[in-house]
Every structure is written in structure tokens, then in C-alpha cells.
Amino acid sequence: SPGVSLGSVMSVSVLSVSSRIACVSLASSSSSRGVGAVPRTRARVDGTSRFRGHATVETIASSSRAGASGRTSLVAEPLTSLGFAPFGQVAFPEEDGAAFGPEDAQLDLSRGTPRFYLMRLRDKHMEFDTITYHEQCTQCLGALGSESWYMAVSQATHDVTQYPVGESIKVFEIPPGVFVKMHAGTWHAGPLWDSAAGPNAMDFYNLELSDTNQVDHNCHEYGTGDGFEVVGSSVMK
Image 1 (tube, rainbow, N blue to C red):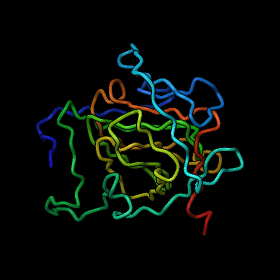
Image 2: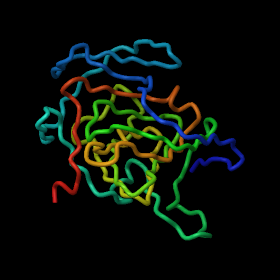
Image 3: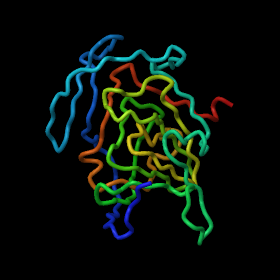
Image 4: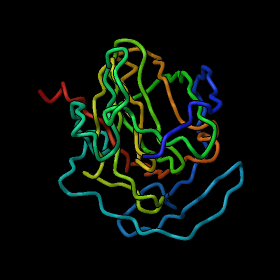
């Protein structure tokens, strides 16, 4: 599989994320979207935008259950290599000196300058209205500290108009001490946690490309009332 040259220049920094990143998105033309409504597809790159036509809105699977807030509830699963395999890899601690192998994160950072940095997130909740993917690279995310966190993922479609719905979205509870690598194109929302019950801020190490935040956020916005809430796996035991 394609990899990254160790000779590549890597940018290392600490970033506090507080503003929303411009992205390719689908937005409903009304705040209350009905089945069959036709949203517009907006692509935004480097501050410019253009419309890409229309996309058909899909019905959320009837077996998904509505939460008290009106959002669709998604129950988190414990993180396993097998369960996460359609979306990427789980990287566990290895003994020093272990040889590189298929269990290591298989990276593709060949389309730009790799960027490895600490990302500080604040005031997060167990819900999301937007989901995104990165077409140009794999992405690795892991948390510092001793807190678990959550990531919603769905298999790549490589098309912003073919966004995930209902039970095609899986949520994983990611424990401390591991990181996840997402395949290029994997839809994702997160990191998520309940900052009201846990830490107000968390730091994550993030490996992507130096311009991922500027040119490779491909998003779908579900709109008011069409988002998702995450129920932690421990709540369901």
C-alpha cells in the first residue's frame, strides 16, 4: 500500500480549534427537511464557492430510533480491529524494536506535506449535525490523557452527494492508549465527548496533510432536526 517517505517535511504544532472549517457541503433549502426535498451541493475551496447541482435526499432507516431531542440516536460500540476494519485501522502499543507489518497504520500521505500536530478541542457534546471526509490522505487521531472519546464513521463513497444516513453510520468508543487511522474517503464526525460531564477540553494528536483543513474537507450538513445523538456503550449495559 502507498506510504509516506520518511524524508518528507513534517509540520508539528499545537492548535486550538474554535472556528468552523469551510467545506464541501449539502444544505437543505429549509430548516425542516422533508423526504424528497432537494438540497444544493456547495463546494468551497480557498474561500470561493460554486454549486454542483442537486442531490436526492435519502430516507433515514426506519430502524434507527429517535432520541428525546428529535435527533436520531446512535449507540456506540466498543472499539475492535475487526469492527473498525471497513473504516480504517486501530493501532495498539507495540514493543520497542518490533518490525513494521500489516498491523501498523498503513498511511497514504503522498499527495502533500504531512502535518503532525496536537489539536485542542473544547466544549464538545455527544451529537453532530455535520459529517466530513478527506479524499487526499489517510488520517490518524488519538487522545492524550486517560479519557475515552467517540468517533462516528461511515464507509467511503468518494462523493459528497452520497452521504451516509441512518444505520450506515457506526459510532465507536475509543479508549485511551490507542489511536485510529481512517482510510482516505472515510466519512467521520468527531472527536466527540460530553464536556459537561467530563473534561472541558481534550488534546488529540492528528496526522494528515498540511492543507487538509483548507482544501480537503468534504462535508454534508444534515440540517435542523436531522442530526444525530450518540449514546455511550456503557449507558446501554
